[in-house]
Length: 144
Image 1: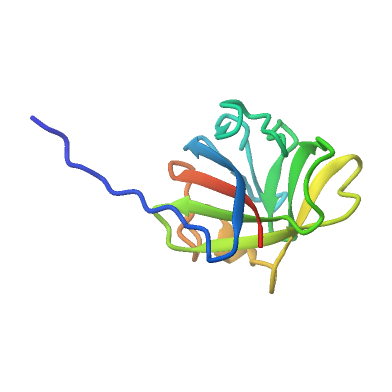
Image 2: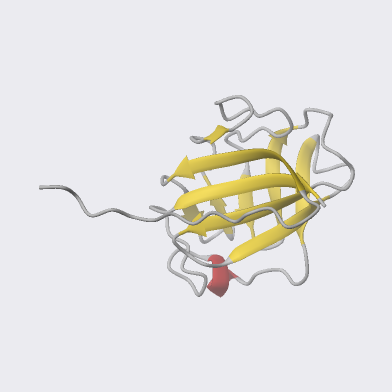
């Protein structure tokens, strides 16, 4: 028997944007309610390298997506000052963007949410956004 097909829809770059790198992870993320973040976002790969250490950003065990900002591992030193990230969990239709913060957090890269910060109720496992640990996580690093 042939399994049913699934369509995955990934966000596409808007006119004038340059996508620098794309991280993809199929499931395995963990929602940590006490910390208000998703972590274990380091088992996927960046399109530039095929590993969790991309050309611009590193997804390591300290990386997370939280209600206040998004943190990546050790700075590689070449993230453009106007860089943004676009985060989606597929099949959820909720896509969020964040902009790089100069100086990061203790030597790591930090991106603050554009617009209002998501609430815990929106981004938690099974929350309003519909994000779940079995989804496909996509992070696009781009410049406008």
